[in-house]
Image (tube, one colour):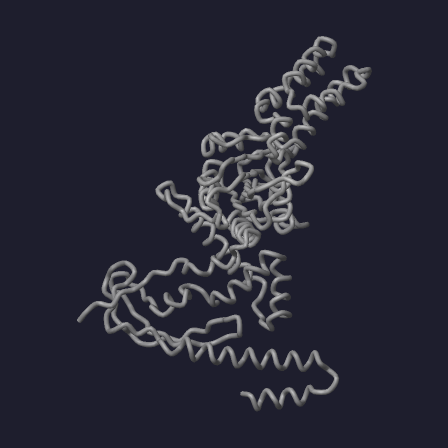
Length: 444
């Protein structure tokens, strides 16, 4: 192998450094693939003449079967012991269980490579990236299937961890016994879907048919201190994400499990940040009743600007009204904001008054979540910029590109991979052998 590599290198020698690099890289990958094939093939998975199959039946050894396997170093071929179960009328390969290759064409190393690239860019671009960076030819369609499958497996694993029966999860508190402040920021964003994924769902279009499905996201981060001016500082590398297309009732346990894993039970102050959507506060009340709820001030200001547009449409001479109400809002004096609005209702045309009155419940319902002066005095974040950015970077930058339309399983897989990557725990995906079942020899 080395002599052939040297010969290839001599043919491409000269000033073409790139050609030399390509030859050496391809040669080293070939050597590595050969070493990996020998190493993995040393144990062919023979576990005796009879084994207990995954369903608990007796399975007998039949012979050895070959399998082409794609790895991060290139393709290899393995010969593995094959067992057949009469009760199940199916065969299985114990060595594939050991290597996490049941029903898969690629090793965990290559699957990780596929997941990282496919989560970052469209599948065709991911195929080109892997070709340039690793010298491997996979194919865009195969990359799509592999990445989405691993993402879905990860989503199912996270759902299992969120099972209510699991009450003890390992906490990650960066060595602290008690964290100062933990934030749970929640939001949602629409992702374009194929027609089958939105069937029988209403939307905002004139034909009342939905074009998107909502991806629900949560960002959990911590805060230890404020800066010299009293503004809160998010702890570096403290943000992790949870994302799903599931209904809110199923999303809540996922976020609660992640919060427990992050050490919410050892946090001095828990804060929930949201944009005012009722489903967010229903989750907060159910899962974190002890938390301080805060409506994102920027969304509150948007609602106030909308209210001001309604007011000034009916009363063009209300100069200064918006500035005064913005001061009320910044001070957390929602009662004054509502009172001064209600004082104007009798002066407005009937339809304008009705529109203004309809806008007020947003403020009255969330009044206790809009005490911004109080929140500032305690050094809390009052804006949900972290989760807003998360919606754009996790969902928007990959799932909402021009011309994209997803189905739920595919979008779930990619969104989950992106959330795990952004949370710096993508490596943990391949430490679990998804859908792998151990086998046990039967004593003679």
